[in-house]
Amino acid sequence: MNPETVFGKLGKWANKPIKNLPRDLLPIATAYIPRWDELTPKERTDRAIEVDRQRGLKSKLRYDRAVRAQRAARDPVQERIDWYDDTLDASHWAALGDISPIDAAMLLCCHNPNESSFDAFSSDETGSTSYETPVNSGMVVTAYAPKHLRMLARRLVDIDKADHKPRTLRDWHQEARSRDLAYHSWIDGYVDATAQSATPAPVETVGPACHNPAPLPLTTLDIAHCFDGLHWSESQWKTNLAKRTKNPGWLGADSIAIPGAQGGNETRWYPVRLGAALAAKQGIPPRSIRARFQAKPQLTDWKDARGDYEAQYLATE
Image 1 (cartoon, rainbow, N blue to C red):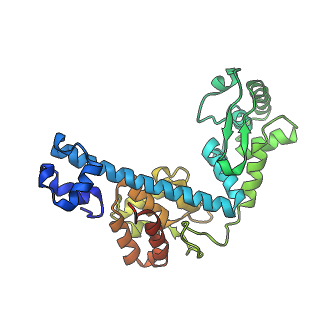
Image 2: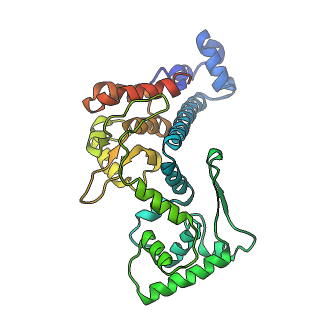
């Protein structure tokens, strides 16, 4: 039981009426579990655990916003990539080895096939879809209208029938570009931006309070060893990290420093961001995560970054 959490402070008192709680715990109980005496001990416990989960999630969200703001300030190219990844799942589609002509047409018209179907987009004559970017970017992107989507889809289907083979998003982009087909300019910007960012930046910072170059991100094996027993065992960490390089899920896409490639570089991870995800998504106590940064040799160089994160986001929790 972590004494820094609401559950850590109130858990052992869950079966007591509020009048029996120590004086220093009364403000915490009334603030976070205001209907204390109306709840059963189990309901009080569940409420305390949920409060901790929500507080951890808010801390992670603040951290993520700060990371994105800092990244945008120093790297507008990466900001554009991140924005298209968020709105169109661009990195997901760019990673696929074969995309159907219909999905390709939707993407080239700035529609996300993960959000709706071709029939839904192509039959909606009420207007086009607009995606507004963050306020400070000054970008507003409007998807192509249904008529253009239908026309491009027919051309791409025809191309596929004449020469059927696996095509990636970049392949379809080149097909449309070489044939002078009408498509949305977002894909030009995305391809250019990802080409510019293909070489890793020499300096990477981890949080808004960290101004020094960060140490080398850790490999999957290092992360598995360091976080053994935090939510997963070491072997489970190895297995699950290997599975989640394309779709990291609750680990967070920003926890991946360098995506691995078959026969090439191995995946490397930001341990501070993984620690933040463990606390926010899995309820791992911050103290348990901090202990790993203090005890594991592989995390020694990351202790300051973890300290910056805690000072910025956990000190006022």
